Length: 249
Image 1 (spheres, rainbow, N blue to C red):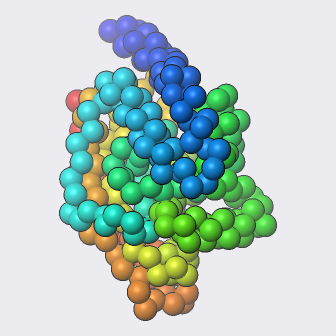
Image 2 (cartoon, rainbow, N blue to C red):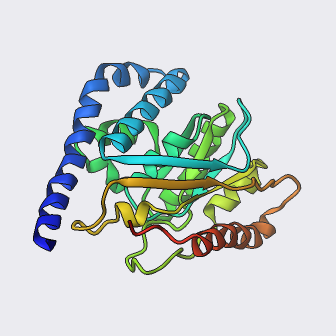
């Protein structure tokens, strides 16, 4: 039975990459047009949501989202969540109606075709390079000034130890939110690690639960508050993860 299950998972994982490539090829002419001008980013974002929806449902996932608050149209936010899976990207796109840009690791730009659009629409960071980390704030400022939101996974990457519910948060996201006095939108992805972790022979189709928690305002906060803000957001997400363990079936 285990051999059959692993054979299924092998083809299912291969299908993930085939589906990613196929959906980008399908949308390619429209995606290409949408990145020609910065003011067309809203159109690109809508296409990205279509792409994310194709991936999620094409893999047999059924997103179920609970909203404690909803984002106002034409307002900038900082979106954060736990980060355990490649499908976190698709879930974030699926959930948010407000156009946002990802702050993500530069390594993803190496992916064929996906990387072409990734490096032209996202804010890339080399976490080992202090100049690159500093440049993120300037690029984020430019996007926020245009009315966009920003998404950062504050763990700074997926923990190597899959038993960790939530790794420590870096301060950069909270410094950005305080600098621009924008609300923080904490999200929790309950099932992504169980259903599609970075372990190749693992996971399965099924329900993907997520929750958009109450927003945290940063009006009046100063940079000295970034550490306490960091801990507050992390505790909100961690509490949810521990109180509502992912389903195993």
